[in-house]
Image (cartoon, rainbow, N blue to C red; front, side, top):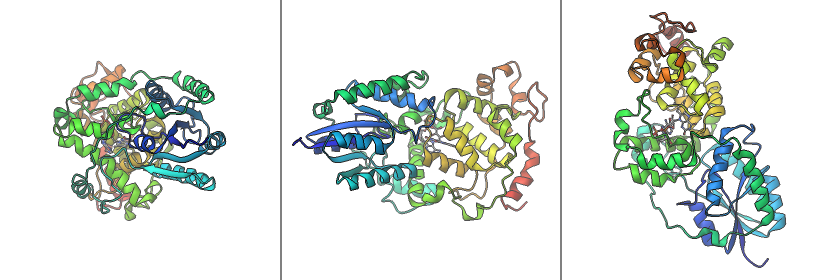
Length: 434
Ligand SMILES: Cc1cc2nc3c(=O)[nH]c(=O)nc-3n(C[C@H](O)[C@H](O)[C@H](O)COP(=O)(O)OP(=O)(O)OC[C@H]3O[C@@H](n4cnc5c(N)ncnc54)[C@H](O)[C@@H]3O)c2cc1C
């Protein structure tokens, strides 16, 4: 009992390599207990693919270092651990989202009551966006961001040497992991991310990233989201090959910067003059959209991709986001929630930021962007490979007909709206002169 034992709570930093919280905890502890808490408040659905993705990442960490896994609220689990051990300090990474911040605040309250120190370590980003002057326009943010990068990758220790052995916790861990590993997803295996990082040709990113047919974006988002691969590692292998890729990494941190400076973004439109748009929220339109039967093959293919793969190509996210909020005049919050239920890479700050951006209510100097789903399909899926992959029933139809279901009649659902006929209505709803 005289030993100084600390606790480490893993969050969105599910890795051993280049993990600043783990390193700091190791350096300041004689012994420590690394834990991950599956919190039912966060993961409501038992079949959520994120649960098995996380469980697999932890299983792989455990091949090198013991991590104890618990199922329960933070309060329940922390009480249990504090009852068994005299813990001096609790280490965890500093949250990047508002929900994460609220979660840590509750943990801190509990620890304060018990006289335990709480240490939040800033990690999982390339720049301390909190310290930059508040920028509401991405390009201004990027100029500051790229001058203030913190790219130091420190050395790793033999972390396992200081981990407390606990048989009871170990048995419990096995049970929880077994439960979640049943639904393991094959497409997004743990190794896929590491292989992708090694094999991906970043020098082609700028030219091909928007191409829906051949999927040329990095597909690293789930591994970045859960911190399975260090963001500094990703930067170190890409920065000299593609500035355009680095700019996307900066977009990620732009949204954290915005959430940090304007936490109201979770509920409120960033642009004040867009807070009273009269959304139509037509139930039939929404149903057709969620069930991939809008009659626009490019939209429906994207929704099928989301449901089948728990991921959607960025260009497709933009096309469907514009279609839902502009063509259908559905509140962006509904699209945001739908994505949050399906995306493996779902991140509160990034999803809300992007939905507000594509709905033209977020931080964007342009008053409105309306994507034409026909032109988008022609431009980014010229051979209709993407459409045909996710809607194989259309595989025999020529691409130009699939791109433009208004002009050509195809054996498919009738388009629920005619894009060109909606423009005036959209502009009126947005208060833009027509
Ligand atoms: C409506 C909408 C919702 C989105 N929701 C999410 C979300 O919940 N989680 C999420 O990680 N991304 C989200 N994005 C951003 C983007 O679509 C994904 O990050 C990207 O498609 C992931 O694929 P990739 O790893 O191949 O990206 P790449 O193009 O290879 O980019 C590399 C990395 O940069 C970051 N990045 C790229 N684009 C963006 C962007 N627009 N905003 C912030 N970061 C970006 C991601 O971490 C990504 O993995 C959303 C975009 C839109 C339009």
